[in-house]
Image (cartoon, rainbow, N blue to C red; front, side, top):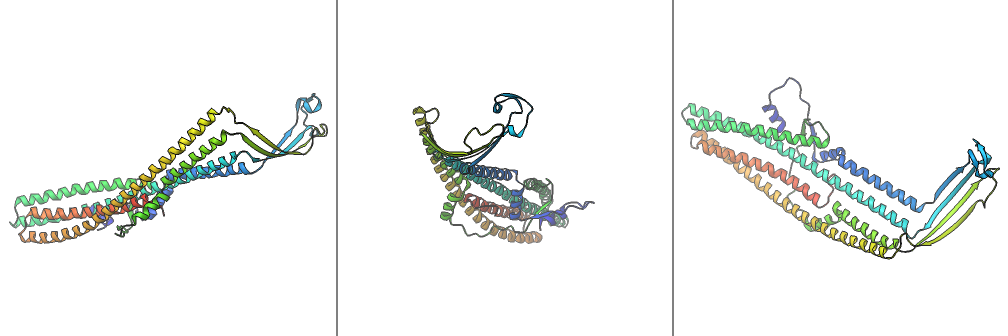
Length: 433
């Protein structure tokens, strides 16, 4: 019995037509959640910002700069006219136009460091973007399979109600024919009403899961939804742990961020040494000034030159530069230790996810076998109860065993599905593909 059919059987008819529920697959729902996620959009925007900043820094480092200046004195004492007083004069002959072209050819690698820092910031933003997508994709998978579990448990609760109601009707007929006692009848009626309470709770749990399911994808909180009939634990063959552990160390976003942090600190250490040394610069410049006719040529025009400079850094006292470099080296060493700790954590998570997946697949296999046994036992006891050779306690126990086995199989199924996603997350496999 599907959840949709169960809802039609258990819910009273209404006058207005109910909206048709949207049908989701796991992959489609994950993509929809990523498209609607503000966290993912924010990370994407930050990545685009960091990439644009890197391009800007590269252009500033390697391209020449162009300057243009127009100068005139429309009012007051005109410097170009021997300080003669002017009253709102904007004549072209009194205006000078200056064009300059400057190109830094070398500045002791300062521009190279800035470009590299911008590139590392870009790569860090990209890793953060990947991390955000992974986190939201896993949250989407959890919400999807939680709703699937609640659908399955609601189905079990509906079946339980039907079994208990049929059992009560059977016991009442047998009681009226003198084949069962009043205690048996009361026991059957109690089980029937208990199953009604269980169904009400299952309906409430399903509504809670639907709420979370809809909020993640940006739908109205009470919008109906149905899951495609593709719920299967997948292959029971376990993945190769050694290969996946190596893959996790190379592609997990956390590892990428830790490695980039080491590069940032090592670059800062190198830059601290560079900043403490004398700075050599080489600049090329070209200038042209078009003077007004009343001003005349006051200099060589155009003019161009190479400027070679050597200077100590500002605030040089040797001690400060030494301690700055020492502090930068210590921060780089700390970043390397953080990378080692992150690698250890990743290995731990991969092994823990592998153990959980192995346990979940084993539990599902056993739960499937147990459900089949419990179903055959219920059929046997139910027939014996009709014939009077089994009492109501034995029948109730057989019913409970069967419904419990169905519940455990549903829970094991969705635990296996989530565990497979958890393992993919642990090894760094993109969950949105």
